[in-house]
Amino acid sequence: MKLRNPKLPPTVGKVFFRNGTTEYWCSASSVHSKYGNVVATAAHCAYDVKSGKPVENWVFIPSYVGNGETPFGIYVGHTLHLNDTYAATGDFDYDYAFVTVHHGYQWVQDNDANGNVKKDAKGQPLYKRVDMGRLESQVGGQGFAWNRGFTVAAYAFGYPAGPHPNGSRPFTGQTMESCLTKNTKKISTQKWELDKGVLFRGCGFTAGASGGPWVIKYSSTRRIGYLNGVNSLTWDLNGDGRYDGVSSPYFDTATYLVYSYAARQKTD
Image (cartoon, rainbow, N blue to C red; front, side, top):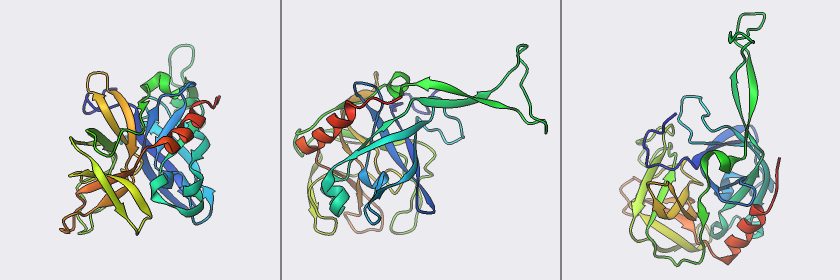
């Protein structure tokens, strides 16, 4: 299966999870690791500060295409790695998370020895679960970059779907969207305890894009670069009722330490 846009990275997809009785989704990306099993996203897409617990039923579907197909498999979360400060206070300077995942799987029609589709007693097709192996073996993984300063050229990717403050909905959440900037900048706000935020001006992402990667030195040919941020907060910078900016926590040494710990964990 081909992506809608061949320049978009297959590493990016959607995460689905449950928090209490409510189901949500965010965006995320495969990131390179020793065992090819790490997904980067926003901390608020994996951990609920109010309850002090990780979310439940967390799964990652890379290259999500909106029609129910899973061309590169489904990956169930194994272990959540995040900064202790976010877990304790919800400080958005630490709104990043790295989730190790199990081997992926895919449901395919089950055929008999003659190639005919097996069916149940009601005549419905039967499916079998097929092991897809490691995440990175299927879609690759973005590199990891930290301490690169607040001014960088970057792409942002994600699956926005929510409304703008004025109620308009330009996105469906069914396709991957992207933004490009030549210069990010520093931003802060007391509301979210954000002291070292990085602003991506001119990107109109809405809810659903949270956790999607910021990639620097991106090669549209190889569709690989270096993860240097994640979509965290959206901003209406000019007050017109539409989001026109998105920010990420600054990826520093503290971020690297969380990532490096996750990148060394082996899963089945």
